[in-house]
Length: 428
Image (cartoon, rainbow, N blue to C red):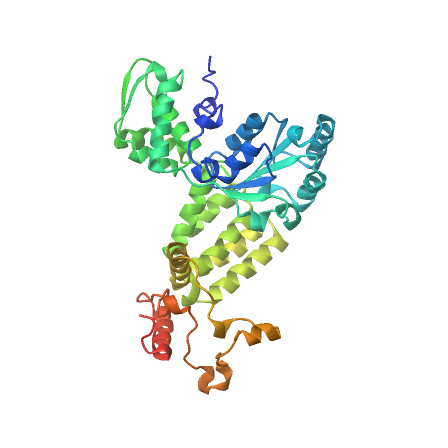
């Protein structure tokens, strides 16, 4: 019988991969994790994705499916000593044999220092353990390169709306506590929106709502009821929980919206909550390029300088450095031309595939390549007036395709006008 003192999300944690919802790109018929499980050989891996998408659950179910010893650490509360103790236990379990190699799961591995990550590296290299790390941060920045090179990185996607709706239906049908009520989820939209795609948060909000009623009552869950009962209950900041991501989202959107007062308020919420200052500074670097970019290139320089300063200073003085950067970025002109351009180009590639590099643009370091006309016909721009000469730089099949579009932003228009002038309307 379920212990209702345990949170609903934990009570409903899947017991097998067949109960697991979502991530079909990894677990579907041709998914890489599915293929690895079928072969009974699993690589060390980093599971990268937003909160509540099932990273911890997936690690547990992989170990269960393969019948492997499973060790679980949280980077928030564990250190080198804990890692070494587990490695010692793993060595006694038979780590030299693949079928019995223990799995070490490290939640929030991005919070491990370089020294802590180094303590895991040796065991992975020797084959003592398979590592499964979970992170909400880009592992390229947060996991040391030596460890990252020995792991497959799998990106877990946010749950789709249909997945979350199914999760609600399953919860009402399966959970001992929820079955004591007559629950009709008439309007799930606000509930799903409040969760931000986080399955754990979704179930926690559902439990908050249901707990407001008496056993046996009929509950019509509507958008207005959810707003009334749930919104205030979750509006606190927890640097290790779901609100961590809501606050940083509000922070970034305030800067993007050129409201320095609101941005400073959300910054203060994070400072008072003990947030990692480098986490905030990294987000400012991204924003400086994504939302300001070409409208004010100095924004990226200042954001990067802020990050470096915060690394040196730390709390509490870093709050002043962050405040200076936040006010500057909020006040700055905004442009997302670069962001939209790379998105458009990537989308074009996915839809149209790759095209061969034109011969004139190919590298020709050897005589054979030169004999094959690699580099033939290329015009060296510096030999021409204003260091420019019109020539084709795209594959023949897609010449004239434009990825850069200007809004009414002054700097964006200047860039687009120069493109039009140089290329005489080629890129429309």
